[in-house]
Structure formats: structure tokens, C-alpha cells
Image (cartoon, rainbow, N blue to C red):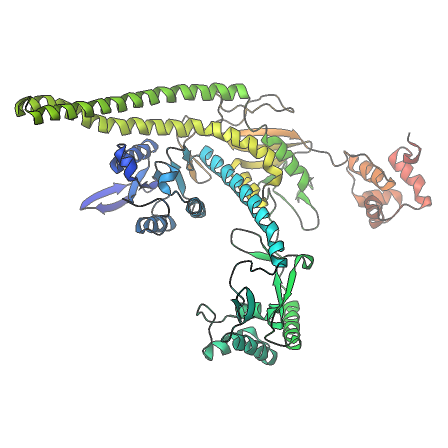
Length: 611
């Protein structure tokens, strides 16, 4: 229990209750239509109340354009509250009210994802506090990432052409140089410092020492910062100083602006005026190469798509060792190739949802309820408009002297009372409608997005695939003959807890619903408000010996896998070394004639005599 004081009133709140903020930005045009800031705030508060959340902050941006909002005081306050955990969700009427700038919307989304906070858009029916909302938002983000990659590829295609023409490709000139009439020329103030850096490094051979000496002499980088050893290393490596300018030689690999060198065949080189001699540049870079060879860091380990989620049928976790491209159980030596498991997962995505008939029935029922609520809301708006017209007419009569003040009062008070009732009733109905839309209509969008996800899966970046796998996957169990995938899903059918039919298995009861009778339950540390169940998909795993052997070594391998023997055990039967069997299977060597009779006996047939 947390005790807080708000405007002199002591309030007690449950610390386990989700703390959210309300974002209000209403344009002048919307206010003319009757959408006041108070209306939007009440609508959001009623939605939070329906969820059982605690509204702790309201962020109001009055008369602020949606073109850019990130630098406003209220936006900064909201981001600080997200980062320090004061709020864990933000409710707003629609995405356009949060920001109209697409770039800012994406930046907000990244910040909320980083700090595990939720975005709740009432108009678009997106609520990332629900499992279905998180899945929908994750898939939409993956699709957006795919679109960005496509655009980036088209933009990148124009870079080599501009580079070969000698045109600037954007960005500042290297330290020591400046752009002058589209030409790269030495900078009169920076060039001597760049040259001094090479001379000092040849003498002292320490990057940190050079950085300290430059700083002590009063030199600074172009933006006024102190020199660092990484800056010194980058400038010493840059061949521009010896008169060779590189273009189209790097490529950005992720959203954090990390880059890697392209193959040298794609580089575009131009001659520029040198600052140092080629001998001095080569001497300094030879020292750097020698130092790097002595203290070379290990390469970063690749994170596999199903790492941490893959289990053997015996209950042990399966890992991908560095010496084999397979998930391996260290207990019972059960294994499955990495590519096979991803192939099975991709194929099962299209079986992730129930039949189209069940989906249509559920969505149709939800649409009927929503339509009734929308009709009620329209009736209330019409009544509100009618009352406003009656009040205006009554006021005109009073102004013209057709009725006196007593008659005006007798007629006006009932109308004013009904207007106040409508002002309370309309946000209440709107909030109920928001809950219905987010709880039901988002599932229809998820189905569409998931089908699109199946077709685009092979082209998605690895990071996006991993993010989707983490959202929908509980665990993957590798049995001897099949792969069992336990996925999280809010089913549209009226029979939760049933395993969706696949081509391999008939419908069978699965794990009971996780919603525990409709109550909100904890899932991955977050609250699941939709009826969320565990769905099990099963598929036959591809057998390792399910291939058509072409060579004698492949015949040996297929027979060995069928008998579940190791290469060492086969080698003992054939009276050869285990490395010999390995080389036969890989096709690097062929069996000698004296080994052929033993091989035919082991196979049980003569592969050279097959029809």
C-alpha cells in the first residue's frame, strides 16, 4: 500500500495496481465539434476504471500543434515518468492525438518498448497491456521494420552512383578537412592537429597517451570535446589523411547506427590533397595492426531464434553448441537441426488460428454487440444536439421578450439538467465501446496480420523474428518423432482450451485456459485481460535419415542414423577409424576396395547394384 498526498488530501493506493497516465491534446477544430479536453479525459478515466488501473498523471497539451510534440514540457515530463517507473502505461484517444509526426510516433514506441510500458490507443483499439494487443503491436512493428528495410535498400542503391560521381554523400568532412565548392580540401586549423597526431603516435605508440597529450596542449575535436583513444584510433585509420578518400565503404546494421565495412570491391576511392606522407600513415597503421593482433577480442556469440525456449522430451533444455548447427540435449543427445526447427515453426504459423468459420462467428457476434453500443452512442449524440438547439431557441425567445425570466427558468432548468446527464453518460458509453473494440476487434486484425506474417516470415530481420517468437511462444519440446509447440493465444472461438486442428493431429483438449474464470492473470510479468489460453501445435519432425543417398558415404550415413549408431560404433564394425567414417559421410574420401564387402554387409544391400 502506498500513501500519497494530492492537494492536501491523503490517498492510499495499491502498489500492485497498474499506474497509468492520460495524454490529452485536442485541436481547436475538435473543440468546435464538441470534443473538449474534459470529454477525452473522462473517456480515458472510465477506460482505466474498467481495467482496474490507477490514473496518477494527466498530460495536457493545450493549443499545441501535433507536428512536433516531443520537445514540449509535458512530453518531456511524460517520458521522465516512463523512464523512472512512475507510470507504466499511457492512454490517449487516438494515435493522431499522441503525435502526427510519424518519426516521433516511432521514437515514442521504441522508448515505451525499452522501459516495458504500454500504449493504449482507444480509437485504433490497440492496448499493449493485453497479450493480443502486444502480439498485434509486435507484428505491426515487424512489418514496419520490413518496410523500412525495403526503403533503405532502395536508398542504398543510389549511394554507389553518387560516390562514383564524386558527390558528397552527406555528413561532415573528416577532421582535418572541409568541403569547399563540392571539393574536399585540408582545413587550415584542423589539418596541422591531424598531422601532429600521426607524428606523436609514431613516437609514443599509445592511443590514450596521444589523446592526453593533445588535450593537455589545448586541442579539441570539432564539437569542442576532449580527444579520446577511440577518436585517435578512428582518425589514424582513416586513409583520407594520406590522400585517399573512401566512399560507399560502410553499411549500417541496426537502429543503433552501428556500422560495418563493405567488401573492398564495392568501395569508391578518390584522390584528395594529403595531410601526411603515405610512409607515415603506413607506419602508424602497422603499429595499430600489431597491437590489435595481440589483444584481439572474441567475436560476439550469435543468438539463435529459439534459444532459451527449446526443450528436449526428457525435460532438459537444448542448446546450439559452437561445433554443430543443431539444438542438442546434453542429457540424452536428442538433436534437431536449426534450419529444420525454423522450417517447422514457419509452417505452423498458418495453423496458429482456428478455422475461418469459427473466426467469422466470433467476430460477427462481437460486431453485433459493438453495433448496438454505437447506435446507443449515436442516439445520445443526437439527443445532445437536439437539447442544444432547444436551449438556443429558448434563449432567443427570452431575448426577444416572448417569455419572461420566470418562464425561461421553468423551461431551462430541465433542459440543463438533461444536458449535464448527457455529459456524464456519453463518456461512460464511449469507454464501454472502447473496451469492447479493443477486446474483440483487435483479434480480427491479428488474424489478418498473422496471415501476412506467414508470407513475409522468410524476409523479416532476425531481431524481429526473435521478438515475435518471444511474444507468442511458451516453449518448444523436441520429441523423438515430433515437435510440440506451446504457444500463447487469445482464441476467437467459443471453446477455449481446444487445440487447433492441424494436418497431423485431430482436435484434442489442451492446457486449461489461463484466464482462471475470467479473472486477470499474470503472464510474463504483465496482466492478461483477454481470455488467454495455451495452444499446442504438433508437427512431425523431419527425420535425419529422410533423404535420398547418392554416394556410398551417404548410404553409410543413412543406415547409421536408422540404427541410431555413432560414427565410432560404425567404425568398430567396419574395422576402420571413426575419422575415416566421418570423411566418407562428408564425401571428402571414398572407401578403399578392401572395405567394400564389410560396408555391403553393414548396409544389408549393395548400393552399386540398385536399379
